[in-house]
Image (tube, rainbow, N blue to C red):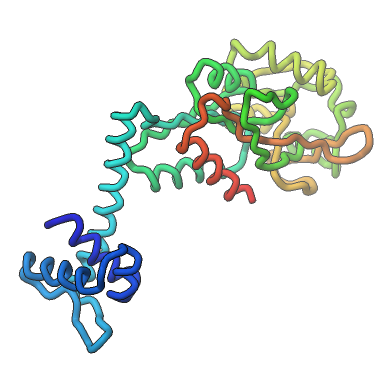
Length: 295
């Protein structure tokens, strides 16, 4: 079966017209008709039931259209991959994402990208802010989903995606969990549970203590689930961020807005970052997918 014949047949089915399929492929209508007839002769089956100027798919034609479209898509991806290897282009994508972000968007973006490019290897790595920064600087990550802690660098492409609103998660038996909002001052002398690998613990401690003014003890865990188990047992509070600005929620673990000195809920901006010198079509496409999901 010649790929060109299958391509013409699928174009006719998709557009519902021999004329439109010919226009899309920049060939004559008779050429399209001849190729579809040749495909039917090759397979020995009728694919289209013709009615004057119109047509409908036979059962065999429906199967060929559905599976043939997938085959053509896979062939196109395979061609891009082979050409990419030959030309030294990227054939994989590694995305770094902030380990304490609680949204679904990065996961959905990875799934959508993988569906579009089944022959491109997609990897996702979770890490703290500084871990992700070192990954991209060492070339071990192509794109980061991260919060903004430093001034935006001209060496990076910086695409704003969303704003995260600050909360703290507290045990239901902690009196502060009954409040509509809490401040950093209210949390003094409690224990802050932070997500960070052992080698990044001091970096996170310094940031929360010196930049965010948390005057408390710190305890480090390596996952959100581990942190929430500690919160449920009333061993401390865990700072988290959400896209929504809202009131307190939850039962066993209560999520309470964290407000600043002005009484407004604290927030932080999130971006897609990548080095300008390592821009490629795969990175740009993944960033576009993220933008669409956060829009």
